[in-house]
Image (cartoon, rainbow, N blue to C red; front, side, top):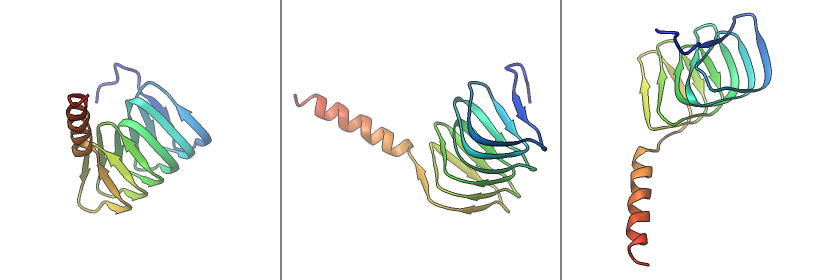
Length: 126
């Protein structure tokens, strides 16, 4: 994995309670409680991570434990051994064998296409 764009990392022994915001890719190996918002970046929850937070990012890769809702404008990946308790809203979702997921899934790609079509058709009726 290239680190040209300077990925930030939250180490194994670090505990953060509150709000994490940023504009670069982030790897979490420690504990985060609260919210994580990386609107245009990739968020990776490492295998040693324990996260009790709502996550918002462009892409989310989960290898550890997450308790909270996940919103991604791109892709969410749940790798083998990961545990997720919460709802997922994304354009794409990939779940490997032996990943644990408890929650609802909303794949919004179809909804966005329908929304654009509806706006285009009502715009022509003015």
